[in-house]
Length: 132
Image (cartoon, rainbow, N blue to C red; front, side):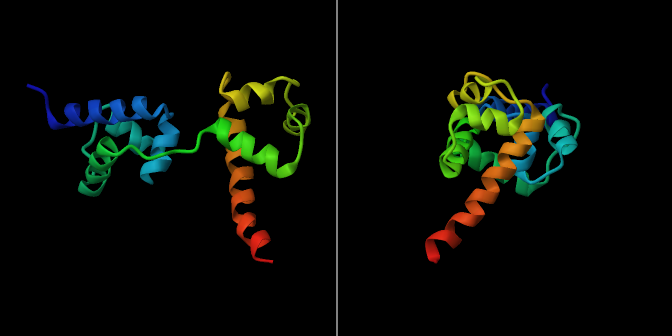
């Protein structure tokens, strides 16, 4: 007989696969530490009721998430740069940024953090520019 921990672990893993996110990204989505997410997904601990409710909510109505390629396009557009200029800015090969933008290649975690930070800074600035 399957335990609640194992049943929940399968549900957490299934949701992560459905959303096509990393464990780190899922932990951020749920507002918990990476190791907490991993313990849920491996069936080591049972989540708090609020996290189970969030799981149920996301299973029924998956969140619409902005992907890394989407963020790359927003950043480049906002900066008014070409793809090779973005590659230079990030210190990667000329075609790499284009691959990231098209979703043909996933950046390393280091670059994902930089992209998310740049995106966050652009989004936080945007309303101020429109207001003035």
